[in-house]
Length: 211
Image (cartoon, rainbow, N blue to C red; front, side, top):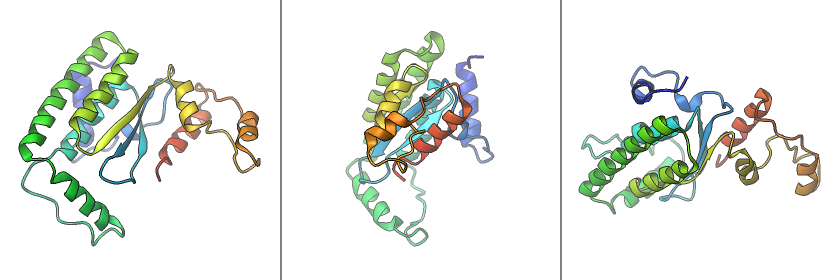
């Protein structure tokens, strides 16, 4: 059953709360999933994919998690984590230098405008259902709002499964079994979105991008 706007709001506020357990980005990849591909601007590392149960959850990921995290202007900053995680200090330093380019006022303006735009997009999706133009609109909002993470692609299944596999490859292909890519892909089983095992392989493949 389709979710209402209030369903999405409650679902995500509960997920990101202190007692949140079942997070929408950790659920199994389903036939109507939405996959996003993003990367940070402040460092060459960090690209990756997230998959969500539907397009509404992808909107809410940016509305309730990514934007508040990245555009936080509160004065109570977390202590440095560079001494806790090997290799984290250079990334933390790079982010702080990048963040210093933007004033708190600019960040507050970006956040307010981005949240309003995402709220409107969610209303449109809930009322009208997914349309391809909505995926492009999500990219535009995210890239105009966030100062670091950049959203490159949005894939909504089943319509975009062909484009997704063309970009990231068939997760069923065994690249260790053959000497060349063309032979490997020709020998791979055809991907079947209705097959739970195939979807699990796709989810694993997406989780490894950028790692």
